[in-house]
Image 1 (cartoon, protein in one colour):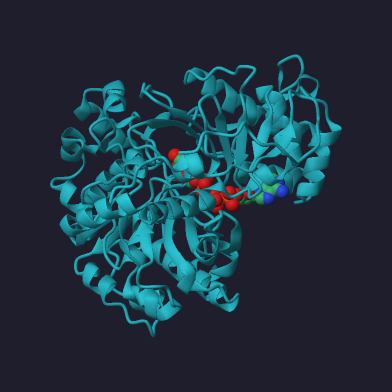
Image 2 (tube, protein in one colour):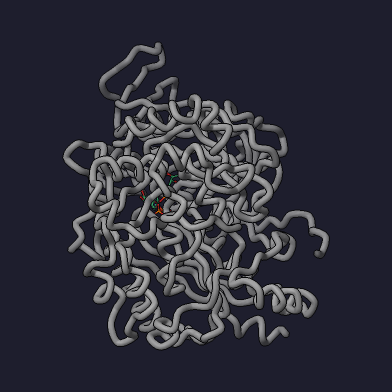
Length: 542
Ligand SMILES: Nc1ncnc2c1ncn2[C@@H]1O[C@H](COP(=O)(O)OP(=O)(O)O)[C@@H](O)[C@H]1O
Ligand SMILES: O=C(CO)[C@@H](O)[C@H](O)COP(=O)(O)O
């Protein structure tokens, strides 16, 4: 069994805003391969900035769907060149940036299940497969009218939040679909299926349309998060017969089927390699970090997000409640901040010559509290709170137009994290002496930034070895999907289930066998050694 565990690989993909990433683990959860494709620099022909295109109205933000397709071709090529052994992959799963949508043209499903392994995905999908070539993504804020209409139809913002977990948000997929139906009726008419970025990616691997999972589906303003079915009121208000275009939602732990013969023949995947449902990047990250009651997770990717595992949904006008990606009968709360890494990069470019080293030095050399200087940095319309503009205040609370570069760096990072804390507390989170902050995402590799996070939350901050918990979470989910088959009794049940349905439901207990490696960062404001291993109290075996 030991040898078998090391022989088997599990893949987790992440189709995120700025790049496509992959992590492979073996059955003992060791990372055996990592790779990525950066959209701006490795696929310059799509002319994106930060993976997206900002339109002239400065509100519409899209990404070319074919860029994601070509990125997958490129990533698989890179893995082949690195001699990654695809035949050992027993299961794969993945995630996508949340809310973004993909529109498949009539007839696309036939193309998808008859792909020729001698040609790339891009070669075969570039003509006539997508009815909308530029997919709306989460940074879009052009659907205000549709948001108002949806809230009116649902009986108000709070009522909509009670049904779907969130009041109407511009980036939420339902409002994007409504805008498309109104503004581009021909393309809409020509669409046979609408996917989220996550279910689009799963569809590529399956060679057929993949279901939207409950967790990523909660970011659409369309799913009733309690009954876990599409809400009639929301569907009606968005587009007639929308349920046919969306397909039925499924638990995030579903095994969707085997990888398509295209990947078997082109890359050498085994025919028995399974595809486990893909989900949103934040839910996948929750799975990768293995959040426990009382913990708070802060993801510092393109967006900054804060999330918590919750048992009972209490939707409000601020923040979001999603179905939980690990235990689909529970929930997670999430806050999203648009001015995250891209704003830190802008200030880095202006104040520290484009260097993270110098940026970090500015944080080291300025005191906690920044001698009373503080700022709000909303380069683009923020989500939480809905505000725009840059405002700096001196120690007398007088607004000033500039401060020194070093003070600016600390004002930015402290201001961002104070806002993350304030809004988490408004959501009902209270910081206690047991609070742990779990950090992930690209900027969590910067220990000076994490020190500010620790100081502001007055709590220890932990990272996992890999700053990329999203991919790792997907690889764990893939492994979870597969591991149950080694248990004879469950195998029997699965076999019976298999004969009656093409979808298997996996129990949500994988937390109990997933080990957690933590790098300890700091404790209660004292600056202790970075990356000292800390293990939690051993848990009961399942
Ligand atoms: N050393 C660093 N210090 C601060 N931020 C960093 C550092 N390295 C990378 N980042 C930030 O990480 C971001 C990308 O994070 P990532 O989680 O990979 O994004 P996404 O998954 O949204 O594509 C970049 O925009 C960059 O600003
Ligand atoms: O809109 C949200 C969450 O509601 C974003 O968090 C997107 O899911 C994009 O994620 P990153 O690329 O920043 O990780």
